Length: 230
Length: 386
Image 1 (spheres, chains in turn purple, orange):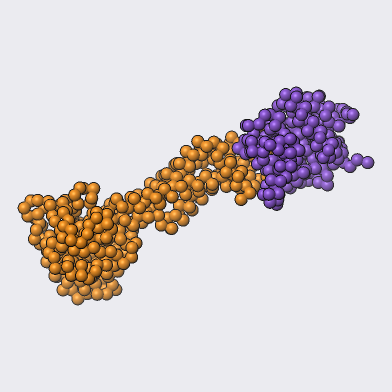
Image 2 (cartoon, rainbow over the protein chains, first blue to last red; image 1 turned 45 degrees about the horizontal axis):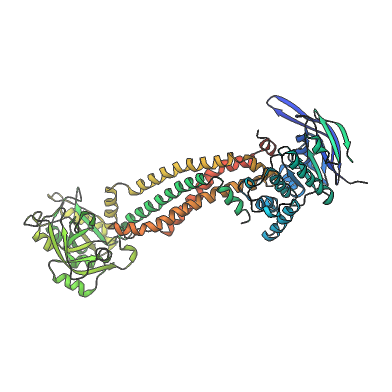
């Protein structure tokens, strides 16, 4: 039986904007198994990114129970969530979000600065991560000197360098052309299949979702459909 | 140390902006170092004033001359050990920019009163023998290349010779130093005989500018001060006697409250700097809100992000301040060599420590608001650019 890594029970998320309260997610129940590659799809405003933020520990639910591994994220303080994220989650963003002043190596090293690893050990892990994403020879380059695809692969290297339990990807191919997008998605698939990473990915792109093992559709804050891929 | 590459790279995110901000801070600290050194040089005279020395001037002004006969009358007081009359000569060597203080005085009692002035005995004897003799501070002799035996022409600024000429000449018979090299700037002067000066000058004969009085017991200073001033009370030449320390303080205050002027200038400069550097830090943080949000996403704590921004502010201010101080340390000896009476101009350890403390304070003040903003930013909002 598959081990559940992410578990949501009755999770809701409300935002207050001025006097108005908007419920973005309604009473969600969801299980994601270890080793899953889940694509979250849905129209704009359906709550995909909000759900991703909750699973990644960037935000807390307004109601309900949210577990990732052994951790009850809904009960954690902001500081506890910060520590938890550093140890358990890797993030990949649509616009890469690399620090432009740092080289690829230094960008990938960022999560490791929070660990007690020595400089030599950090650099060793950085090189391995860059090797996995196929950019071993680009370590000294700054983001502006890389193509979009390369920058996203550096971002993926940064996401995996601390060996997290979960990879959270928000529209990772939204800024890339089809060919490059397929390369990046192939890399995520490789990380899922070969390295056993559990991945949750938000996407608008049905072709991107085909690289996932499951697809969930959200509409107006509710799960409407679940599809498994071959 | 592990965060240093990150802090350094962030600091140089926009090199021109960082460079110009650093330049402004460096110039402010250069100014601080120069003004502090000048202020210290002014105060050195107060610090080295002898506890047993008094100065008697005209009651109403230092420019009011006194009869030389006052010297004998003061000397006759029981609490007085020595008296020497002195005048301001105000001449220069060759050109006006070569100005340095010259004083006609009674050499023997004067040297006895100032044991901190070190003059070899044979040179002292030569001085006492030579009517047109002069002794000069070593720093001045080095600056102008004077050596014993030289005839030094001094162009008078106030006192012409009896024939109307301003060209005085003195035979250099001695070069003195100070016991403590730190005091050199105080005694950067030329001394010559009052008797020669008095005979040769065109007007003002029989007068002195002021008198230096050495008391037998510093504990009796107040009594002696009262006795001296009482001696000439209700005469056409009333006196005002003070301790040498009080006199030096009053003399400096005649030029204005140097300390207050310096503090005001430095205060205004740093106040302006506060806005300039604060603006740089605010801009720097504002334009990388998404990057700071990414750091928080990766697991950097609120305190960690606050510390990173403060460290960046510290690096900016300290690096620039140290550059300014280093430049001051290089410039000060050159300035000291050009300014008579300021040969002791230097960046003291106290001034250096003060500058570093100001730099740290500046960094904390200008860095705190952007650092707090960075610390408080909400990841979800910042990533969504809300």
